[in-house]
Image 1 (cartoon, rainbow, N blue to C red):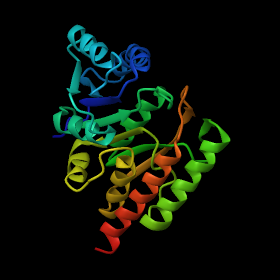
Image 2: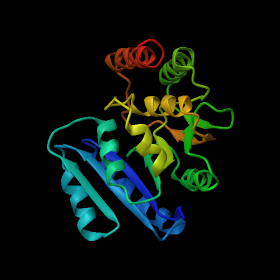
Image 3: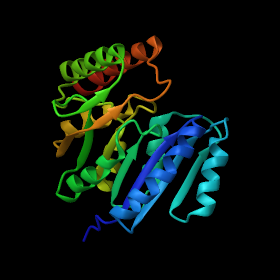
Image 4: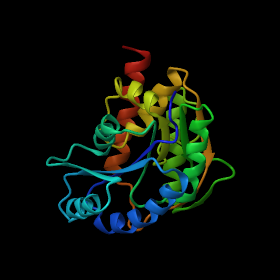
Length: 237
């Protein structure tokens, strides 16, 4: 029998030591209130600002915290892939270290997986969602998600919200085919999941843009190319 009480939560980190210091003390009490069988993996991707030392300190002082460190930066998606390969929980969750999504939604993510969904994902673009962010980022987000739906035949509203949960069997199956190692990883996972007919729940969230968060024009072009590359892989080649 699958033990959906066991939960792995992953926080990917790259050079964000202050956000990490803020996040962990908030996450642990909430996790403890939701399940007694949990682990928190800090997937730290060759940070140089003290994040590695901070993560190591947390792991030394709490047996439920695991620090995954790499000496070479390989990307956020790659860090999450590594964490999924090490996870011991039957539910695999992750959220961004800036905790832009209200952590109170974690209970709802877990609930959907326990009720039979393969994936539960936060959405900033559902009518019930409450979002605080700049007009520029809102326009870019809506434009990006429109292109994903258009080219990759997705029915989801939001692909890049860094607040997701999976059954461990689902995420490991999807990662056998997922190729992106950076920010497009989230979108590729959800598109491949839909193509395989997995059951996905979108939940409205409260989301606040993090301090200093920016979307560079170079990132936009990279994401656009990634959409076209995945379209070619899935529907042409």
